[in-house]
Amino acid sequence: MADQRRAAVCSLFLALVVTPLVLSQELDTSGTLPKPYATSVSKDFADFTTEFSVFWGPEHIYTTTDQMLDLTLTNLSGAGFSSRRTFIYGRINMNLKLIAGDSSGTVTTYYLTSFGDYHDELDFEFLGNQTGQPYILQTNVFANGVGEREQRIFLWFDPSADFHSYSVLWNKKQIVFFVDGVPIRVFKNNEALGMPYLNKQPMGVYSSLWNGDSWATQGGRVKINWDYAPFIATFQNYNYDACEWLSNVTVPACAAADANNWWDGAAYDDLTPVQVNELRKVQEEYMVYDYCTDTKRNPTPPVECAGNL
Image 1 (tube, rainbow, N blue to C red):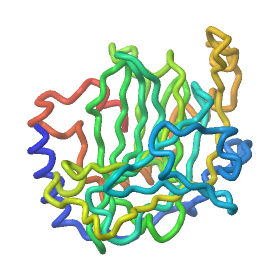
Image 2 (cartoon, rainbow, N blue to C red; image 1 turned 90 degrees about the vertical axis):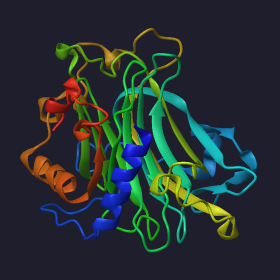
Image 3 (cartoon, rainbow, N blue to C red; image 1 turned 135 degrees about the horizontal axis):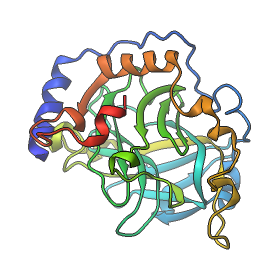
């Protein structure tokens, strides 16, 4: 199955010329979006230890005086950090500037996850490429330990030239992945159809930079060129407006069935008509792989696909 997916992505890669996305609303790279999203304060990477801890490669993590954080990858090691807080529902954002030049074989990640055999997870995975060729953004959703829900898109801009925002809106009805305020993926609550949803486990925020050249670029055909190391991905403007799950409570009040958070409002049960239009443009013009339409892998489309836009 992996080889079939690699071949499909490679053929689409050769055929696609990436053009700017024409939107009916202005791009938002702040990661805050219009109110009521814009109710949180950016966290300062200059005070890294307040919000984060290192889980891998401390010698490859650098904070700067201008409130940024660099992850570096060499032939010795990559690096990763994680949030000290865990959340259930809300909006979480990170701004990233990816590796410039030849980033073949590298994988930069920003994701939310819990742990255990039945963990939940929401992934942004940025798959590096050769100079002049577009990055691929792979998203994935794990619910109750079940994943393999990959979607891949080409980004409509150079993500190494400047910072761009990558956000998740997560509530009891849907999960939406955003790039610069543009919805690129929706995962609906389909518990009524027997599908698990991400509504029982708090998740932490994680980021890492690592060697994925066995699969990341053109199905593993293009390897990392270590002559270009160190590879550097930069992070800033981490912010959230979310329900924090403290360790000393069973279920926080903000996650209760009768909670009255802004993200529980009817306005966030579905995308707006404008957002649906933007999502369709991304799917039609930039999507290069969707597990829902991979008939060799899934002869019968997974149950959730019909309702996920």
